[in-house]
Image 1 (tube, rainbow, N blue to C red):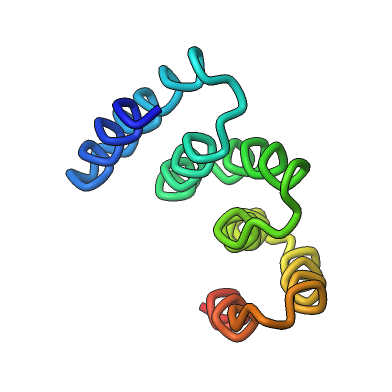
Image 2 (tube, rainbow, N blue to C red):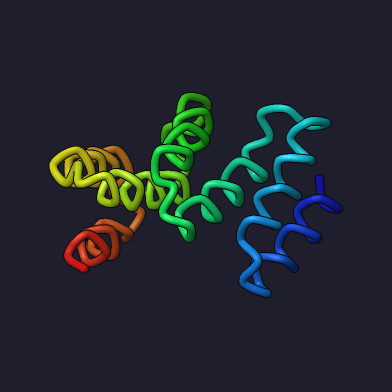
Length: 114
């Protein structure tokens, strides 16, 4: 997993989002359903405004771990990108209620306002 993640991250840092997505996808061939690779790949999809693709990856992560902070944040961005603002806000509100110790509620709402 680490090799694919590191190569993908290098491509991502070089703004080669499509290359990064391919690298994370290659890792997922060998490590199907790996949350780390799915989350990184979803971030690449978000950078390319491929919100529906990010949505698919993030749903897989959140089915297993509904309190995954980064996946929740990215899902709110994907929903916003798809102009599903109410769903994004409901997601953030629900997450904040389930996770009162996580101070991300404000950050999520600020992201939605952009």
